[in-house]
Length: 277
Length: 283
Image (cartoon, rainbow over all chains, first blue to last red):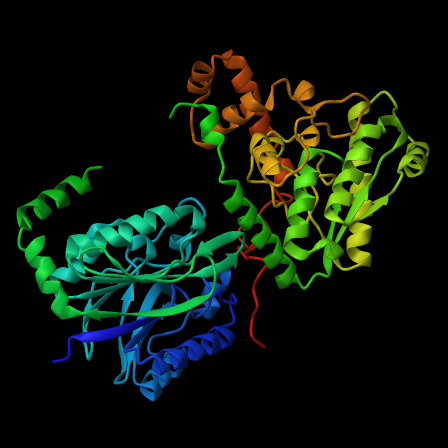
């Protein structure tokens, strides 16, 4: 089986609440990614609607699969690549049960979704006001290997990436809407998650200004030893791509065998300790 | 955390870029034709004007210098002209003496001894003129309030506190001064005592009762959830001084917020209607 793939990343300023416009921008980048022979293209958190949708989240959210998914998986089929993007999801079970979700579609159609597990509701963030917590860390077997997804604040919790990696994800995708003041945290944590899990990590962040928040972009593909394979511009709309090869995981895993050296008993203790903060 | 001057360091280049980008983006999204701002000859408005020019170009920035007889200061006037000349922007001098005299004569209960009410009347008159130009020429009003003055409520509600955007409101005064020097605003403007220009011989530090270097550290501590006792100890200040600043901060929240109503209905303006200005819904 092929082990080398190409990941494209696109960061763009969304028009808040205007799916039609945001989809048109994503379409443009999907075409560009195909021209560059990319196997996957990744867009930021809530790229379908913009991040700061506040009360409009109730009307903008869609069931998955749904109308926008159909459009996006149509693009995936047409252009023969995988696409990851973010959107507010409406539960099948209740119209006001919403999730902040990352969606994966591919040449085979809709592949799967990840619902954000850690919803920031502090500082300028108010996600718990609108969204329900996600409870699962699924991974997806795709034509470009096993993929796991997470969203933004999840990266502060190493257990999410670890859970994905332990299930076999070799490429972890983190989509994000991170304001500039938190740049340093994300630059450090994205690298840390890649190193500690000896996997590839693609981080794709929003750009533009929403309600005074300036998103810093800086999307990147990071290799298993923490090296930057490609990095997009800070603060500006940008597109780039990088190549990764799963064969290259082996020497890194042998050099720093973090997965081999895991101590499962610590996880039991962690569970107990974390219940009594 | 040790409260000391280095906490108020900024990266002036990045700050300049962020604020410029913010002004540009807001103008683009609102489709405004440009900016109108008050240029007093002081450091805050000089920085606001400079960043507005960097954001949208000098031809789209209109500056108003609005003196009145009681507080006219020739030096401030020269400084306003100096900044306008340096930035090559249009500066209009609008003397408010006559309109204020008319207001004083028109208000049945006008009390010349009440300087606060008179001062606020001046600030609100300036606001009226700024918004006249904003309406007339489809501009937005760019305010120049800084974080120090905004936090302690040292501004006039619906006067200099009225604006469409406040690009400097997340920078303490001492940080605005640093940014001003980075922007090559003449030190004579940067270092002169700040004044709201509402009353004769009025200086901000005298009225506030503290130098900005100290005030900003107190406010920085409050911003970072420090107790007044810890702040006072660290800065070697009487506890009552720090407590008085905290009180000003908390008591003036009404000046920084949109009007309060009582909840009667399902969703309420300024309470649980949570919207932003930038929705761009498809048809």
